[in-house]
Amino acid sequence: MSGTDLTVVPALPPPMEALKPLRKRVRAKVVQLEGTTQRIPVPIDKPHREWAEALREALGTTSNHFVDASLRRLMAATMLPGEAVPTTNSLSAALALIEGMAPENEVQAALAVNAACLHAASANVLGRLGSGGGERRTIMLATAATRLERAFHSALETFYRMKRGNTQVIRVEKIEIQPGAQAIVGNVNWA
Image (cartoon, rainbow, N blue to C red; front, top):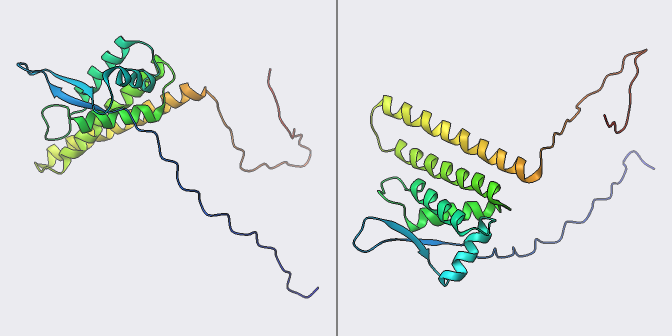
């Protein structure tokens, strides 16, 4: 053969299939009880019984009490910047985050709710950063946002560690074996 070798180039992969539509997330509308200042979540597009079942499924539980406590916690934490009360958008966004994490039981759901609350609080603080104020206020808000983001990421790590199980992966980048040294190559199980 000549000084030039021919290389076979694999064919291009087939075009991506159309993305599957995600199933509709559970949503909640926030309404004010007549004659009070109390706000409660109600279903948007489903009968109440189906909505309650969708919430239990999203939170990985069979307990109505757990669902109620989780919704109350989310409503307390999901006020958007400039809003005095939680809104339909903020509560539905938190529920979508939790549903996306797909908790399988109450422990995982509690961590998912905590992560959603931290995410909402972080977004709230970040939203206040651009509203002006002095340098001292900006530093205080940036510090708070950083801590909330760190707590959010820690909550996500804890959630996924619990969901997948606690595994440790060690990647060896380089091995040098000196003359006279001994080495083991292969899978080693320390029992």
